[in-house]
Image 1 (cartoon, rainbow, N blue to C red):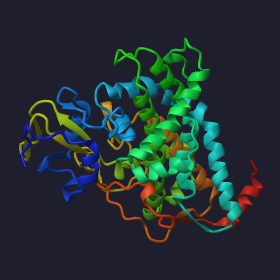
Image 2: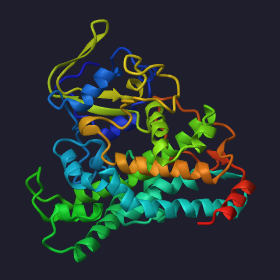
Image 3: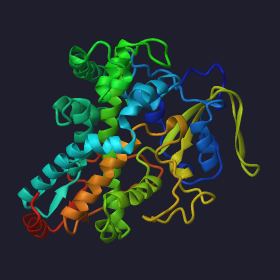
Length: 418
């Protein structure tokens, strides 16, 4: 169906729920149209959609957190329309960079959470364990602690599990708004009245300051619902995309016979391998844009005209396998350099929390590999193509199992007590 100006706006939750991976989403090649959706897969086209704000808006209608039917998470992050994306970048972004700041702020919390999970595994004494209910929770626990909530709170767990980053129910949205709004209010009661963004020590303080003061981009204070949406996004990203990447990495290292290599790496060396996981299996395989005017995608061999107002899916998963940009793109090369993948987005769509995600993944993977001898995926792998999105929350307990040498791990812990 050709896109027309009379076509009703498409909500992001409709896109997320109705759009299933097409085989053409898995490999770079010709752009194509499927119903009202246009699709791009080449590295050049995908990067253009993510970065060229003169040609593509990032606004997909119907996901304003101020809308009673709007999604907190989708409004806070996935749509990122201009200037709402700048809310995130100007307010929340500085709290997640530079890397040295992340190490100082999150290092002790990361180590404590990792130690607790490893100690629990050793105490249990089993040589296998379920990923989703144990170490798969590490990213969520680290980020939630920073955001001022408990990742194991029943409401938080239910909200993330049921919403799955697509569309929470009105009741879940109300309850989460109350919970996260309470976090913001508690901070507001203690934060000095004259505080400015440069004074913020964490995400919660930054959002409260933005609610009080004239926003540098909007020219007005950030609304409470938008502040809640930003905080909801931070928690959801930790519990879903980073957790999913952690599980994908452990599975990929096993399936490709890389675990012995991984065990020898320190935190800094781990990052090269982690980036290859994100290239090969991005946690969120696609971004979206809306054409601001008629745009041509593709090359002379395969060209398509996208009309003004049409929604375009930018398949990062396919772009990351474009042979014009990557040597042997279907190889899983844990020492791949350079690795200019789009698995974390690009431009206005570049992951705001990239340094935090790297910190969590690299420290957790290094710590688990070194402290759990013989660690590897156990049993049936979770089938996952690079054009498919899988949430860690969508995997039932027992569906992702890891094994390790518990006796050797205990002996190692006894020889090197913390």
